[in-house]
Length: 368
Image 1: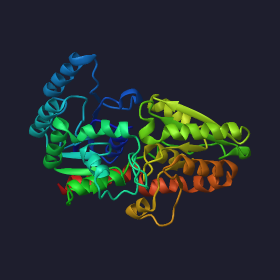
Image 2: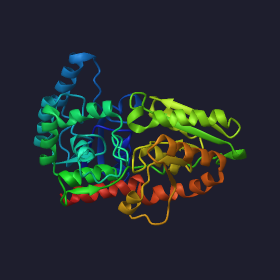
Image 3: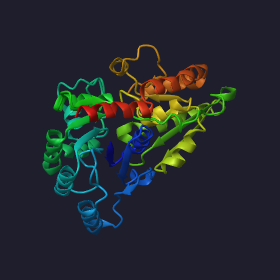
């Protein structure tokens, strides 16, 4: 099967593409490398020139290149699969439709369907990056910005994509619930986040050696509030000052994917995010390496993936006080980290190994 993976978020398509190739398929990953992350791709969709000229150049290239033709399946990472306006995305999408087979949407980031879910009065999520369990609205400025997905041309374009793709795969519980609410049906399939266990080797250093916890926080410099990593950083810094002999902290912002992974591997405990119900790429990479993770891991997530025994993630409450209590306890009782580290890789192998995720995608492709 010839497969085009168009766009990328945090190495998702790059990792999936490598797995599909191992399974014998001809795969092209076309993306901007997740911008500063510089992830692997075989066709670059970066805007190489600044301003409108860069957009015009990319638009012309996407409309004229023969490299994006002749695929059995095209999987787009989002309705906004390249950084262009909706009208131009529509023209490129229509060309992809004319010159290829089936088109599949990968739901693995914020879009209109996700915003419709989290803003709905009957939202099934107990909390989100915009609402605490008490009902209190948080990150109001970010909410206003992300609500643009629900307005104007981009909202109309998202609806067109949902109605016209042949299938949808989802990366997280939250995105699956959003798409289930909007689309549903047999053409929707949860596949999870792919992690290449062959490439992620277990760390060699003992966890919390000498009972000193090395903490790592990797974050997007301009998306700290929505992930809660601003609060995580402040709390972790305060605790490391209070217990300098028991904990240290490394904060990394907006570096390449390769440097990010290298820095992360020196840590014992990875701080992922506060408001997610599920562990995402950072957390899964760390668990694959045999490290410990503070992230989202609510019971509804374990129920959704059918996991009834392994509990490797330290589920953080979505409040500063709750996170502070959790992190303090882990710093003062590092033996808990060693137990969690021992089962993390098994968890990833069971639910997120990239070959497993690729086979789930292929199941949907073949059903189409």
